[in-house]
Amino acid sequence: MTADPAAPRSRLKTPPGVRPDPRTGILLTLVGLLVFSGLNGVVKAQTEYFPVVQIMFFRNAFALLPLALFIGLTMPWRSVRTDRMGLHLLHALLVSGAIGLIFLGYNTLPLADATAINFAAPLVVSVLSLPLLKEPVGRLKWAAVVIGFIGVLIMVRPGGEVIREGAIYAFSGTVMGACGLLLARHLSQFDATITIVFLFMAISSLMTVPLLPFVWVTPSPLQLAGLVAMGVASGIAQYMTTRALFHAAAATIAPLGYTKMIWALLIGYFAFGDWPAPVVLGGAGLVLFSTWIVYRMESGGVRKPPRAG
Image (tube, rainbow, N blue to C red):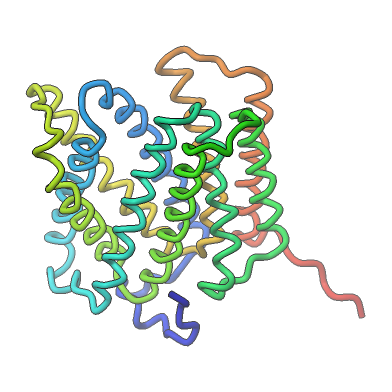
C-alpha cells in the first residue's frame, strides 16, 4: 500500500488548474466532520427503531444519489472507472468493518471508554503514515496529536478497566478505520475523489443487502424520509472528507478528527440543553489548540527555526 513518491501530479484526475492546498483540505475536513457529527445524533435516534445493518444500508445506498447527480452534471461516467478495483474493495471492507467493530464496542462498553479508544485513530494514522505512505510527520504534528488526545481523554474521562472484550472490538475498529484512511490517501494519488467515494458507498451498500431480509423493520413514510435524508447528507459529507485527502496529508487530517468532540458539545447544548462540566470545556480547549497548531503549520504561520551558522 506504499504510495509511489514518483507519481506525477498530472496523473491525478482533477480539474485543470486545481492544485493541492492543505488549508482547503483542513476546511473540507472540519465542515465534513460537522455534518457527520449531526448525522451521528440522527443515527443514535434511529437505533431505537431500526437495526444497525438497515441504518447502514440507507446511509450508504442513498448517499449515492448526490454523488450520481454530481457525476452526471460535471463529468462523463467513464471518469469514475478505475484500474485499482481490488484496492477499492479493500478500502470498503476496512471502513465497513471498522464501523461494525466500533458499534460492537459501543454495545459492550461504557460510551466514554469506547469513545476514548476510538480517538486513538490519529495516533495510529501518524504512526503508520511514515512507513506506509512515506509521509513525514514532524514534531509539531506529533505534538498536535498528543495534545488533542489528552484533551479527548479529559473530556470523556474513561474508566481504568478498559481491557475487555468490548475494548478489543473498539480498538480493532479504530485500527481498521485508520488503515482505511491511509488507503484512501493512497488511492487519491491516482483516482478522482468521486471515484473513491462512489465505489465505497456502492460496495458497502451491496455488503449489507444479503443481511437485510433477516433484520428488516418496515419504516413509516416519515421515518423513510428521514432515513433517505440521512443517506443524502452522508454522501455530501463523505465526498468532502475524502476530497480533503487530495489537498492534505493523512497525518495532517488525522488530528482534526478530535473536533468531533467539539461538535458533539455544541449539538448537545443546543439540541438537548446539556451544559458541559468545566473539565469538559478544558479538554475541548486542548482539542481546539491542537487543531490550531495544524492549521498554522499548513498556512505558513509556524515555520521551522533557521539552522545556526
